[in-house]
Length: 99
Image (cartoon, rainbow, N blue to C red; front, side, top):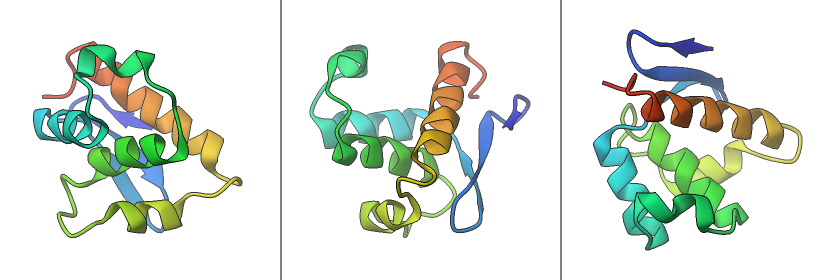
């Protein structure tokens, strides 16, 4: 569920968390994946890439969270759910609702 006022999407992982793709999160994605944001749609969505994208959207509320921590929160049972939430959060960025 999105909170359009605050610019985040609730996601249930190990606990309720909030995906938010701020400028810092988007910069982390670029740094970690080695591509500019404008080319993100062209990269292969490997497990590592999905993990980076999910992690970047969560670190605004937990600076100690590692990519490995995030990887432990996702398995085949919730992968589709996670991908839906990430897509919803990215849609908010594209619409300028993430401020």
